[in-house]
Image (tube, rainbow, N blue to C red; front, side, top):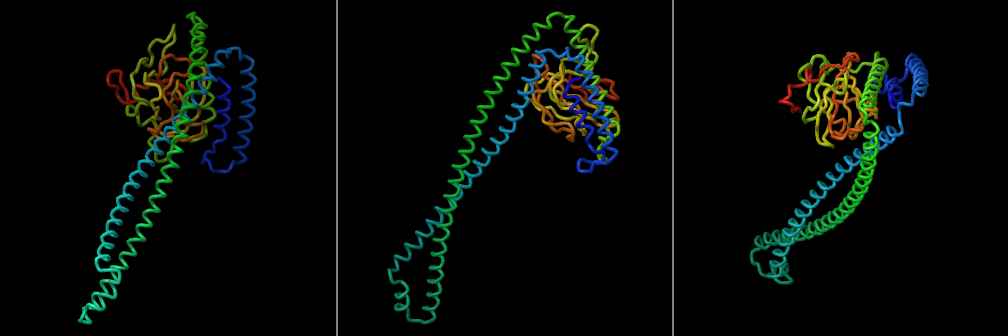
Length: 387
């Protein structure tokens, strides 16, 4: 159990049972104060045995959290760049259409001007003097006035289109400057991320060397699993009287065998398979490319979203009725404690946080704190392939 867990418990306790906008009642305030006292006691207890958290663990946590922040920012920048490029494309199409319309109006005005010139400079007076029949003169004058007004309207249209074209060209220049700034920002963030990834590689190498002895690895894994179990137990107690089920959502228990997998990839470690010594896997490990989206398998509320030793950037979603899903070793987290998530909604990116060398996502399901086999709850894999 770590400090982020205590913060998550504090946030969870502040969720009103009737919705985020409901006022805090006296009962909820009293429960919050009681939880604060409990957190204070847990903090004192944790500090007494904080020797477990080595300097290398702290460095790993800092570097992986920094990578997570940068990855999330790069994802936002990529979205903005895509929208900016789309807008530029739309403006380019609009500019082409405006130019074509301007050319058509100019050509029409040129034809009218040539016709008027052919009639001479005093065409109105000529019409009056050259016609014998008053009715014909009147009709021709109407046509003449109509053509004159049409020429004037065409000239106004041309001015309008020229102004629109100038405005569009100015907007294109402005958007191109914005795009260039976004590219520069993206390059800076990528460079920062590469530096953080280099620092992380150094820390992982030192950790690997430190844990070269199998007995030390086993002790570390056992400690990490105890921490995770303590975290889950604490979250269950904090969430006991806070509903997570939406009235219009199917209950988690009713979807056994039909849940989607959180990411497409290949299962490399199955539930119950040997891990180290007597330890076995209490979830599945899905190998997938770094940066691939991790999606929530069911509607629920985020109970934990932070770094935990052994699991890296970890997200835990509470689905009500004692069911929770766990998503570990992420590169970046998109949600915070208290956020609602929907089935299929991206909640993280596949990564290798927690000191792993290969990218993938740890996926676990808990019922009343006890690990259950995700393969029995999710759709049947094709061999070892899921998603």
